[in-house]
Amino acid sequence: MDRVSTNDGTRAPSGLAMIAPERPRRGRPRNVGLRAAVLQAATDLALADGAGSVSIDAIAKRAAVSRTTIYKWWPSAAAIVLEGLLAAMRDSIVPPTGSDTKGAVDHQLRALNAILTDSTTGPLVRSVIAAASANREVATALLDQWLLPRRAAVTAVLRDGVAAGELRHDLDVEVTVDALFAPAYYRLVFAMPPLDEAALTQLLDTVWRGCTCPDPA
Image (cartoon, rainbow, N blue to C red):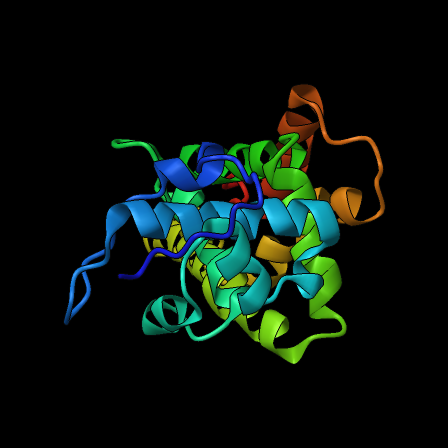
């Protein structure tokens, strides 16, 4: 039996982890109920104590599963925390069908801001970022599982815009990504007021003026 009794009164899995879609993997299929319990436990612990303090032992106890079960599916506590967050937020980097370059970037910019300003996911992201400064495992998971996939998605959109002639041929795509998306993280990390809808529009319009091809004389 994978499930063990802890009798610690923890609540049943709900919220963020419950909406995480199952990803196909080789080998033995995961038990969906146990997986949801583990992801929720990791999320709850990260929100309560910070992502850097979450351990496999603590997750196992709260989720009422064995350590052996957890290690069959995840290599580390950091990987569990990130999977619970990522699975719920994966659609935020997929642009709406039929959107042009600016529309696709606008979608990603507002979706990220919504994640970072949400009362549940915002503190969780902030906790993971804080833990990454002192924990190499968390830092690697944050970079590989969160930042790089999101960055690659918007970079691809911008490069397509360059190829289509919507954006300048000499555009520095990496700097453009930094200019557009760094402000939301900056405000989260330093607990500043988040960007509102009007500020997001102004940010995109300001950066976009430097990205587009100048009108022919």
